[in-house]
Image (cartoon, rainbow, N blue to C red; front, top):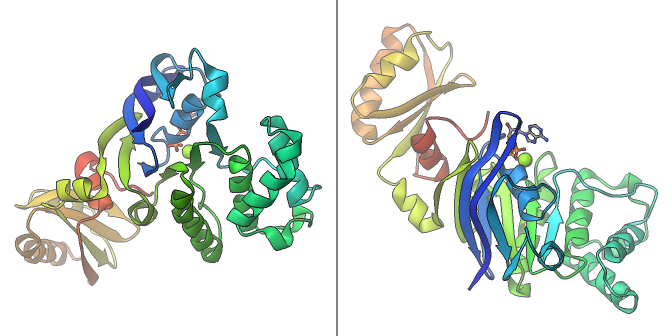
Length: 311
Ligand SMILES: Nc1ncnc2c1ncn2[C@@H]1O[C@H](COP(=O)(O)OP(=O)(O)O)[C@@H](O)[C@H]1O
Ligand SMILES: [Mg+2]
């Protein structure tokens, strides 16, 4: 059963087309990944889904309610975890959640129970009465997730929830998302981290330049990218001409230079590797490390766009 249907969504800021005809569907009970590099249009898409921004074209239907014509009903069904936590530092975790519950129309006689429940979901019960000013970034993110869940939404939309936090909090958040599945909450998980999306998501839409360039289950997308392999070659000094030289070799699909490394997408690693190696040496470069990766969403993205997901 389809819970969210996004169709032909468009949003421009001046001449910049932030979202340019995006369409995808999210089914009930799945963790849906929206994967794309910085600037792809993920946050704008989220703002359009929850009605914070008005679309120039297209439609969003949540659980049968159109965000355009029946915004109040649509909004009730959506919980948002924004990139920047919207929390009051001088209040306790509990008081912050009471506040979010109240403005999201949680009935007064259900509020305390709802607060306790979401504190438990994110593992903050024992810190509930502390002022959050002293919380770590990761704890604030977890509280932000709790705030998004306070009104029992059917769909929780998380905007890059692990950016800039410590690895332990990150793992905690990933496990929390995994567990939401058992609670019949559908999740849209926005990220530019391939590993997180591969770990969490049942289906994925890959976004670039405001467009959805691939959509499917994780196995479907990996299959789509499976004829390609990604190689990383670390080079001590990268010769200027190397990108063009390797691009010209047989079986080189994409070549990018990033942080003293060459990333290659190839249809045949065994054939490309020796000639790429020779080209680097021939131009005076020194190879320090070579890695051959299994096909993943990164290699698919690289193949589809010629760019890396991360800068
Ligand atoms: N309020 C805004 N005004 C002008 N440009 C914006 C605004 N919000 C986003 N953009 C631009 O739209 C594009 C998509 O941004 P965004 O949706 O934030 O991408 P992402 O979340 O994938 O990083 C970017 O080029 C960004 O600079
Ligand atoms: Mg964003």
